[in-house]
Length: 356
Length: 90
View (cartoon, rainbow over the protein chains, first blue to last red):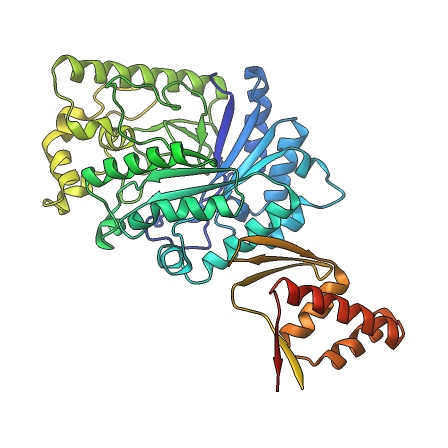
């Protein structure tokens, strides 16, 4: 179902400074304009778009988040958003404004970031006071009957709490739980948060056991180990185009705005400030075609490595997001990057984009 | 003298002073407090004596002592039975 939903990184502003954060913090703080947002949603009607997802940064920090939500409501889409819940009380008040009943009516759920089974672990990653804030947000949403999902980024600090986090989510009565692998950054390396490839597999196996044993819906998000080399993820099937806070269509939200990488990288497909959604879509189709051709070539030449089976890691390497790993030559991820980054890099020129 | 306190495991979320949600982290149970309940709960949080809380209820809602007393006593007994409030006698 291509273009079933559209994902917007509404802003790169954030009120936390999480140790595992993928996003580049050096860029100037800014947010997508409401005019461009409206224009994109209007064009998306032609695709029978159903749903809009908000990420960030912290999406609720968009200076006109209320207007953004009202635009979604006006176009009759449903929506959900990911939040760190730090300012959730004011967000909840805005959502419940009796003058705007559509804000709650069209809200399909809220996804909250949880990074530990207890205050100590969670607050180590996300900052002091954060655990209490998410419990307060969960309290409100649970009592008011809003679907709650929890997103957990597995890292060295919470690796031992994978099962306890599922227990906590289940006991709190949450709807579903998503585990995700950490996308390595220099900060995550410096904080010793990055697990080894073997530990990535172990985390997946433990989550698989939890899925069978527990009633709560549990998933492992995109980026896990894939059995088939020519797998097709949400980005490759164009399920959910990702628009960043600058109004650019990027290849995938998982590598957009990658810390320590080129912000004008090969994954940026088109700028919707200057081209229509339809032309951007064509450029995206070209980029995916190129991606697939390059992958086929690697399969043909038997050049895929064991670590390439981690889908987001492969893309990070393909789009040149993790070349900085050369600073960590002893790490197994870095060794794979150093060995394959030239053979695995996007080589073909995508029309309208700078040459690789 | 009897005083009350709130255990650390109770997460309180105050929604605009007219409603609160309590989450007991020991058993992961949620409770809603209405406006009156919230005034009483806040009195307990502030270490006020039961008489002082009754006085507050009389002032805020303009009710007589008998009614305020019954209200405060009823809610405190309920909170005690749920272990959301602890009783201390000195």
